[in-house]
Structures are given as structure tokens and as C-alpha cells.
Image 1 (cartoon, protein in one colour):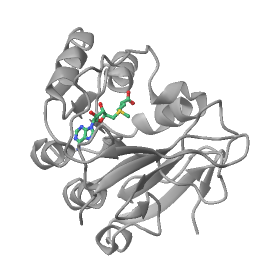
Image 2 (cartoon, rainbow, N blue to C red):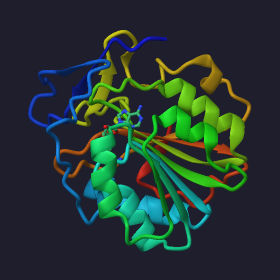
Image 3 (cartoon, rainbow, N blue to C red):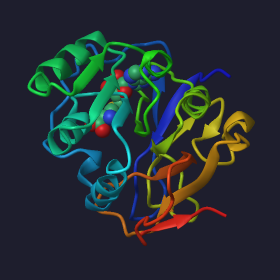
Amino acid sequence: MTQASYISFPASPQNGTVAPVRIKRDQDDNAARVPIYWPAGFHGDPYLMELVDTLVQRVSQFVETGTDSGSTVGYVARMYPHIACWSCEASKQVWEIASKNLECHPNVHLENLLSASLLGRIPYTEHALFWLDAHSHGWGGKLDEERALILDRWPGGYIFMDDFQVPGRPELGFDWYESDGPVNWDNMGKAVKSHPKLKALYYPKYPPPHGTRGFGLLVFGDASIEGLPEFLVEAK
Ligand SMILES: C[S@@+](CC[C@H](N)C(=O)[O-])C[C@H]1O[C@@H](n2cnc3c(N)ncnc32)[C@H](O)[C@@H]1O
């Protein structure tokens, strides 16, 4: 599967139509970028943070792809210091900035790696919460490969797929790869969709805070689906 280029659709609560932002593959456009470090993670979305607070009690590892400034992994490391946090950033320059931002957190392991490489080399014996957010800035990224690697290796956990198209919610932004179409369930590969460990897919059903993007939450392995908040809806 090749991903010739990437288009990001921001949320557009006004009329549901937006001009796509195109970014060419294999072209690191991070050179002049100084990512901003925010004290809150997960887009500052209070529902998402509440959901994470529920799920993180059931895991001992947090794994993020795409560190950027380190806002989300820094938030998790600060709020849950007993959790081992792993994150990777493809851009050396951005990784160096994030490393400085996160140096006060001994539970953060930050690598200057592509996402699939990180998932292929970190410990995978514990239950984990994943925040798959490596996209854009020309690095490509093979989403299905990453999802399948997680399902194959880890015993169970929760996979947040950020920038995922939520059916019936045009006001929520999502990504679009020119060669593969929108990042959504229909375009997910068979290796993931029919993986024996896959248990359920959930979408948000709460109203968006300003600028919110869509996500999908996969539950897999022996991770529990009990006690999930009512602001999620299970995909049928
Ligand atoms: C949306 S930002 C991540 C934001 C961060 N996860 C957070 O929540 O604070 C995406 C980042 O992923 C990086 N990136 C893109 N593709 C990647 C890949 N295949 N592997 C690792 N990093 C990647 C980009 O350079 C960019 O810094």
C-alpha cells in the first residue's frame, strides 16, 4: 500500500465543506517548525481526557505514535506517573524539542523513530493504551500495518485512532490519503478488521468542542469493555 499524499480535513461545523490541505510524501516539512507544548493532551478535549482516565486504570503502558511537542505524552506522564510511556517522532528536529519538553518525566521513553519501528521494538507483554497520531508532515505512515502489529503483539488494550472518520458526524475532522481514501472503517485492511483479537470499535457521540477531530477506539484482546462511558457509541 502506498500513500502518495496526505490530505487533512479540519472540522468544519459551519457547512461541512473544507478545502483539503495537501502535503507531499517523503518531504520533511518540519524544518522551520517549532511545535508548541500545551499542558493538556488529547486536543484539550475534556471527554477524551475523561475516557483516558477510565481506560488508563486498566493498563500499565501508554504508547503514542507521533510525539510533536510532546503535549499528550507529557500530560499522560504527569497525570499517571506509574505508567510507562513510549512515544516516537520521525523528525529529528521536532524530537529534540520534545525531548527537552519531556526531560522532567522519568517515565517517558522518547524515540526518534518511524511509528512502525517503535511498535516493532518496544516491550509488549503488558496491557497498553495506544494513541495513534503519527501522520502528516510528509512521513507517510502505514496505518494498517501499525494496527495489525499491535493486535499481533500485545495481549490486549485500547487503540485510539486519531483523525478517524466518524459516520454521520461531518463536523468532525479526519485524514484522507489520496491513494487510499478517507481514514475510516471501510478502508481498514482485512488483517485488522478480521483479526481474532479485535473486540469492538467505538466512536464519540458527544457534541464537539471547537475544532475537534474524529477518532475511533478499538478494544482488543482480553481488555474489558465494561464500564465505558455513555458518550461513546459502539459501531455495528
Ligand atoms: C498531530 S502531530 C502529533 C501530536 C501529538 N500526538 C499530541 O497529541 O500531542 C503528528 C506528528 O507525527 C509526526 N509523524 C508523522 N508521521 C510519522 C511517522 N510515520 N512516525 C513517527 N512520527 C511521525 C509528525 O512529524 C508530527 O510531529
